[in-house]
Amino acid sequence: MTNAHWLLLLNLASTWYMVGLIWMVQIVHYKLFDRVGDDVFARYAVDHARLITPIVAIPMLLELASAIGLVALPNPVTSPTTSALGLALVVLIWASTAFLQVPCHNQLATGFDAAAYQRLVETNWIRTVLWSLRGILTGYWFVSAMTHSHPASIT
Image (cartoon, rainbow, N blue to C red; front, top):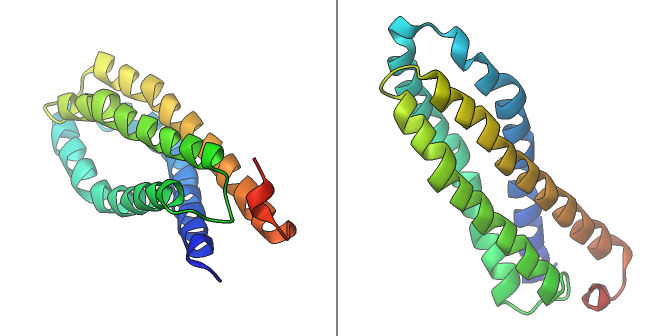
């Protein structure tokens, strides 16, 4: 297996890990935030951030590094266009996280705020959709790599 195939596999695994996690967070976890209770919510929000950071940071960093690798290193697995698209989706996810979700979490760390909570749930759909699109793209790459004798011809 070539380095490009390893990069693809790392990208596929980290992306699909995050696809599953983001859907669970969106559908289950965030939906329960408003049931914690005002008296303990600030502590809950701080603990949530502390506990979830390593669960999301490591795969996000692996996904980013492998997406950069797929763009930077010539490879027979992905086309330059789809590699750039994959990296662009990662950049948009990181931007959404930094500029939309993290500020909501920071505000919630001081206590439950219905508006911040609503913004968090609503804006997290951006990441949910973007990661789902990345999942489809990496799945396409994987199937292409497995079924085509010359995947470099895939555009």
